[in-house]
Length: 521
Image (cartoon, rainbow, N blue to C red):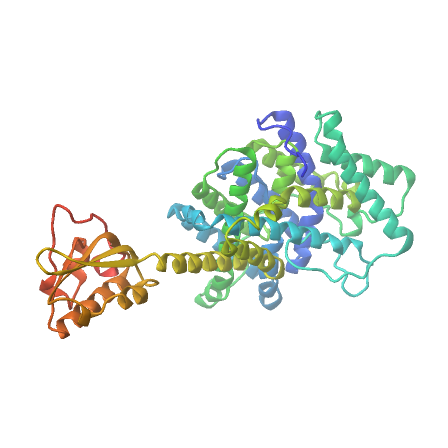
């Protein structure tokens, strides 16, 4: 819908300027996520700085931005409320250790199991969530349903709307920001259009003394350097059992969101990131953040889109974003607090437009109905719950659809050979989903006394398939028929029980594959 990618090549200028743009948008997000998690604003800001810096340096996807996210904040809030912020820091350290372990075990490759409809649903759902989250800025402070300064990627917000001049002012500034971002690249690409829009709208608000909300209305971002701090929790088994469930959930959500964002940035930049390296980078970042008073984090799809849309391609973009953010905290907080939230809302609305896969409206009527269902389902679940649940639901539904479709592919054709034997030729995969259809196609009473079942065009995939063959062998034995099972793999023969000595194996022609069965491990 918009061409938002001015360059596909990393340059120092583009990386630094896009990093500055990202840093400006990171401030209200980090503060908002801190509020969501029930911690001080600086806890969110320190997390955005440290996670962003470390992952930019050692992560597996240059150009991707990481920091404190709403998906993690909504999990953290219960731990903070029940046990305090020190337990959160300990949980973040353990979360990082789990993520490092996942990277060392090369578990990042399992992101390949996420089907494309799930990816589309994830992108569309997250775009909707980012859009809905901005509605909190159109509410009235102190009124029910208004959430201060939120850019949370997590939930639909019930807003008590602004009225009159305040609403017109806010909408006008948002529209001006979006117009600058859209039209400026047609004139020049010397600076990122998002950065130019933020500067222009800020100068307009300050110069004309316009009455609109600014970053300083959310919270003060002034602070010092983060200091090393070992979480002050009892080092006992009880403490470990308290934080373990939270750490596992946080690690899973963090890796899923990071790896899916990695794939999205891969597609946009037409390059390839390294998933396992990103898992390790996220883990190291969270371990460090937990020891320096941060709330932990993961990849941020909204900020990553701002970065790549602004021309950021290299590691320098993420590094400069983190360093600019630290500079804001240390010395430039009075200036940054004057930035109108309308400018940042406009940037995020452009991100929504660029993130949403508008082509899905065109292809949804052309793809199989099951894929369309998965796409819509994942989008909806992402909006009403969180990313991790949505992806798991999408993968499960896709797997069930795949199993159902392949279950219908198994076929059995019968004939009589020159020796008078009844020959059944099986084609298609034999697994848990197809065993019922497989068994229904055999009737011992209709076969001759000598029966041959040929598996040359079939593959036995799991233990359910082996049990089905055993069941079939028992039926023919009970009917007094002589049964021969040919072209089974050696693994099948080893595991079959009731078929026993009836299995005839042609060593030369036997298929060379392995059955997924623990007994062979």
